Length: 443
Image (cartoon, rainbow, N blue to C red; front, side, top):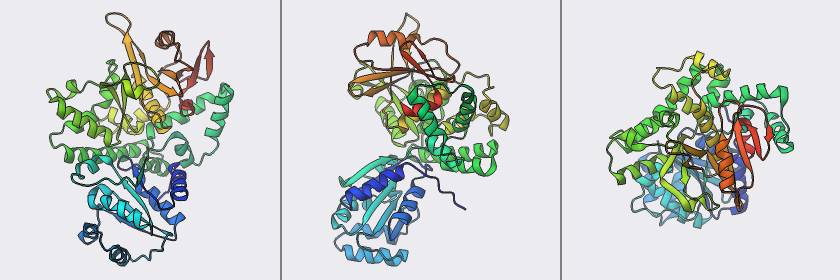
């Protein structure tokens, strides 16, 4: 039985359908296996009288060739209805182009199909191969784009049948109250999310088996799908290597990802192309160094200094233990109970990156020299209106937040609020709000 998980993007699709009423198509981007096809098919079933779902991974040449010539749209629609055995109804039906990157002419056709106005159109795809397959193709401007990320913490709790935790945590956050005795349980619940992650297949495996070895096996399968995709794009294997090395690069105290130390000699232009492909694949999140921490951080980002996170922390944990054939249940149990001795700071940094991105934030960080051998670092910078909210991340308990203090002094004119995110309960320390990691989503 297929499990259908509730996703927040569903509401965004409802809004598009209501507001646009056929005047634009909507394109859902996201990594492979993140749940795009399931979401759009569920939406089509619930919100339309009929729909045609064209999966371009397996569509016949007959179907693909329909988009070679758009002169006779009546013919195209009749053929589609006959081939898929579905009756389309004007303004009451939707046509889904799944994995549209596999049929560039269908993507180009969107412009004219939307203009025709009879039906709604939803596309799904991962940008990475769209770019490769669109030489000489006009990308339609009649398309809105949204991203489907791995399930966020609230969606994960919903999947486990828990609708109460997140609204409760939000109340504690808004009232700035500690959770006291409940904090330990909430941290354990959250570590479960860090381990399983938000890929629907992994969540489904966890719910059905409650077995971390099997969850790990599922995640390895997803990572291998990504590796195959990277291999097809870059047979030299460098793209795959950049992805597989994310945990080891984050665990070093470099303040950034060092691609040359991973790949050795590589031409600058080629490296830029590889990094762009990695970012477009949506399997990763890039956090760029802001050279001048101010409100328009996109204008001052340094594209040569960046950190790379996994878009899904569950996959990140599996990658971190990739050298073993499977990550034994014991490692998962120790991680779950917070008993694993390795410094897990980088896992916490990854989950915070994931949560901030899922809430619609672009990721930036800032470092500056402390002395000849050390740097200060602010892990994340959020821009809010005309102000900045700097964030420092601590994986262990609360120690100090020297970098944060120095940063706030240096940029006092733009800093509005400051946060330390860590594993202990909510409290205040003078100007700084210390937040348990599970509250990151409310920032």
